[in-house]
Length: 212
Image (cartoon, rainbow, N blue to C red; front, side, top):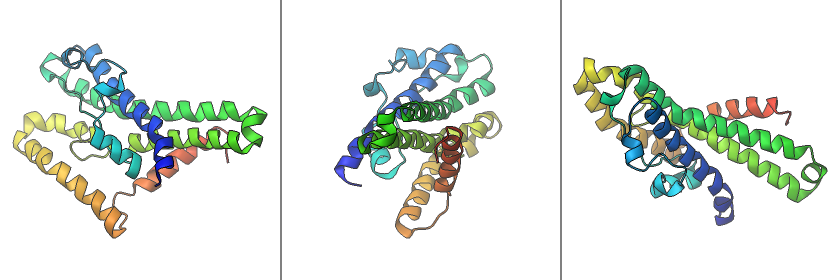
């Protein structure tokens, strides 16, 4: 990917990561925990959320991360349920952002400038790509591997039933995830099948918008 292409997709990565982490913080706050608020994470200021290495990887590789939002489960009224809600709030926000990008692209496409000129079609296409990037964030973060959000769907229960197993999963989960990603990229082996899932979901919603 050349420098110009990287610049083009940066807005989608910044918006996606920022809203993702804000959604975690806001959900935790609404469920009774002020930890993220006290740490200044209840904001849409990207500088409060962006992890620059994770951001760089999203731009060049299509996956990455932001600074994790910290919350205190002891402040939650329904620990297991609320931890899951906090965890899935981030990925779901990326799905919503993707749909908004697709809708904006569809509205622009109604205007002749955006459906008949090279520049206009380029703008529409770029906004669709921004939507696909957020679909990527939605899918990637729902993988059931620590430290991704999808792992909290079961780790929250292991915390009490088998804390040792939970700690081992956290300890080795990140290494396993990095190994899988590196193996896919360097050995050209499709292990996680992320591209297929991303393409299927993106194509479904793009089709609903009337694009072909």
